[in-house]
Length: 403
Image (cartoon, rainbow, N blue to C red; front, side, top):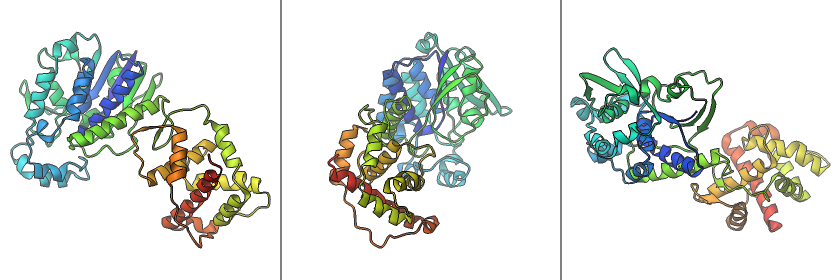
């Protein structure tokens, strides 16, 4: 059986909607889903078959749709991670609200009550599990639909997402706390149901990630490629960015895009042989300049290039040990894309990247580099200056050949 796991993480949860959108486009379906906190809320919309409604809510979201909060206070906390390190800072900022037993999240409950169709979820014939904690003895509750009394699903969803700074509500006389403090990544919920294939969407939110024996389970992780913002940054601008990131990251996870920071459509013409030939055709003059800057000596320029320069460049670029020629060249080009401030969350073609970088990149002349290898272990700015100079040599050489 195939399942989807959605981690908790507050406003970062918008990322999961983008990831699910990509999975749906890929034709990937699930027999069940488990989520904690915001992962449980998103999961309810997905199981309900209305993730589009969730996307609409996320892209129009404002802080007041989630909690009653003064906007000046919100501006102070929106980019702060809720974690042990920052907890005292948050408590100080929210002191007046906490004197009233916490931030009032009745607006969130209203949205869920109006949009969650419990009957449709129960009739979906899919497993749906959530995690919360009863403050009566600090007892964790790992619940599936069959464990939740009818007409109480929204209450338990709120219970799963009740951060300690929120005003906690009672269910049958008991107070509940955010399930992330017991298990923020509820893989075990579906594992114990016999699921053998899982897709896990990470948010890296506050909470505990419990150790699980995953032997015999095929797990695919979809990880954020950049910062998702603060835990309480419930703004449509942040959500729209996270949704796009989730969408592209999920597609890249399933090999629909290549690249490191950027998203590049695969093209058989731009294969390893293509990139090997690019490097092979670097002029002796360029190779000589690079070897001088690296403090590397040798007579045969091709042996110098492949045996010494390329390994050293891989080290400077912090590539994985078994990097390919394609990895090397595209890391150089992606760094220049960043320099040009090219939009990151967008699909690119290889030919367009080469055209744009080769045409628009401007390199300041770097003088008096002449750095010996022994100096490469010195301060970071020296390394960066050296690396920029070498990347300029390579791109200018490639550009001269009209590639």
